[in-house]
Image 1: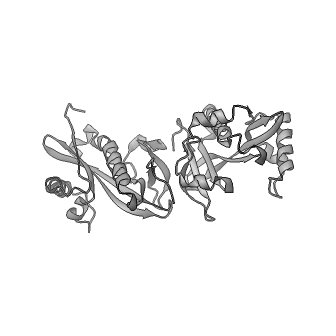
Image 2: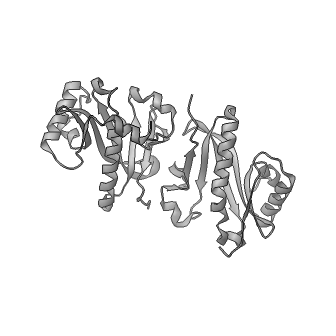
Image 3: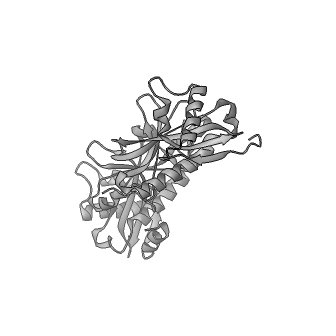
Length: 161
Length: 170
């Protein structure tokens, strides 16, 4: 991994102006957000971020949505990495901190009824890992109409009413 | 209930493999079980269902629990799964855990799937129809059988899957 150390910082619901500013610069620099999505709004969905060389190089975000297929609220997770730092494996380094942060928040905020994490895997984004039905607790739950994998992970504590 | 606890609950029962063994005695005993308890739909021939037997539980030389598996594609996950059905003699529902039989069947099927890669069996699936399991439906992941909720059928039955560890999607 090039010997560079990654610094992981938690951002979920902290309104940390420094991290949010760094993330906004990151998105603007990389040009990753879809049209119509404002970096300032996306910054409010930050869960964890990764820094290397004093620079924010990867983000994990989550938007809480009700998923009709599962009849529960899930944190729909997204991730992005600076292409110059992809070899560091930052996205996988963020996976567990993102999961743990969201799960603890779900436990601490039971009224939110947050049941787990959900992700949509873009074609080719995971390479050979996409062939494994379960990766980092994210289990294949199905496919979108466009053929993207839907992967989910139920939090251990969650129970339906 | 942990997997160990489930196995311990079945300690007084004799769990036997049946998958693709064409064991005439087990099949006859299973047919007798279904007939005795009137469990099968009218349009299902017991002898045909007996060919889907994965594992059975005996008590005092009589079958008191069965687990069958039908290899079928689950379109939601675009993969072929061993879709299981289980039935337990009501007289033995308290003293015996059908979960232990399901675990036993799961292990058998996973070994068989690995030994027959040409079959492309990705895991074990179940559509939960039993009223007896409704309460357990509140748990999205069953820790003993490892069956995980991935959705619902149009008639509101839970669909659960356990992915075999060695399987790789296309």
